[in-house]
Image: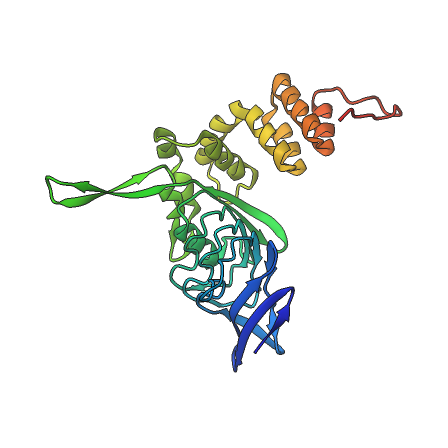
Length: 305
């Protein structure tokens, strides 16, 4: 069967257990797969479902993809060719993933997982398949309960002529984070345990700062020792954190950071200047209040943006 659903051109088949989507053609930047087809729950996404057919161009324009809660199985190379895909929303109950589902999804940096406080098997799959930096948000009972940054790492095989073999090397601090799972479930002890070695290795300071802030902001399973290590790194860099949060338009995170980190006036002033430049009025109000520059009650408020 075939038809247009949610603005997508779909080909699907039905069986006793549900519907399986075999082909997906997205016309725009966003795709939301249906939870039901023909009165049956969508339980499977076929192999190479998003991959181009013979004579077709890859779906490079797709940026965001939302998978249905009912989905149980994703076939081999399902998203092959989606080189522009940046964000995926998936439910933790999607446990059965084929080979190479994310092959060539080199722009994929953001993952949102719903339905389990540890991200379930879906988080384990994405972290294990992607070697680039990944920002993963985990939701349970409608609330954001965990946000994790998985730093980038690079695998390399280098020719060792004298020994007549190839040497395997890992570059970057990310591998222990992407591997911080036991039996397809997140192990926060392993994740936090990689921190001290990360600081000793070459790393991206911005990525590591975001990692530390996210663990402090959403401290599920955070030990006192790990908390102290993250605070020792992040608090002295509060100015950089404020600037990042202003750009992210994260007013809640900004308010929390101002209260928790107690940044100096210079850092607050620089962040306020950035908020003014970007037209981020909510951030501007928070930063003015933190710097004591908010006008007295009853006076007209005027922000020169």
